[in-house]
Each structure stands twice: as C-alpha cells, then as structure tokens.
Image (cartoon, rainbow, N blue to C red; front, side):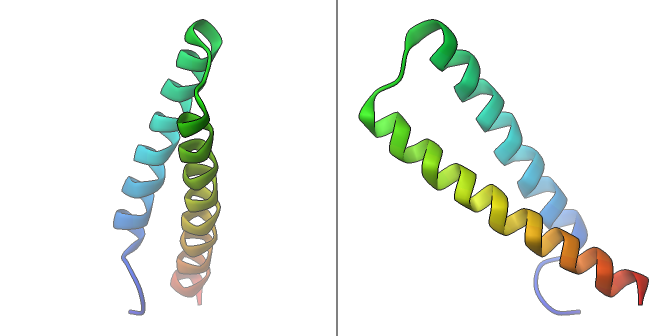
Length: 63
C-alpha cells in the first residue's frame, strides 16, 4: 500500500479538526494574534492535504 494507512490519516485528520475547533473557540472568546492566524492557515492547509490523501486511500481500498 502506498502512503500512510487509512487509520493514520483518519487519526491525523481527527487531531487537526479538534485543534481547529479549539482554536475557533479560543478566537471567539479571546481574539487572535498574528502568530495564531499563521498557525491556523498552516493547519487548514494540512487539513486539506490529509483530507485529499484520506479520500485517495479510500478510493484505492474500494478498487
């Protein structure tokens, strides 16, 4: 199998989404610093990448 397993991708995506939710809650009540904005951009980019990898792994599994 090429690349990370579906389980590893799912675990990373879950972790990233939890971090994203926690960050959104923090922003709602405390505001956001320029450093936090950059971290959020990087996290969202990684969420996109892992999501694409996860979907590709699911496609390979169904073949």
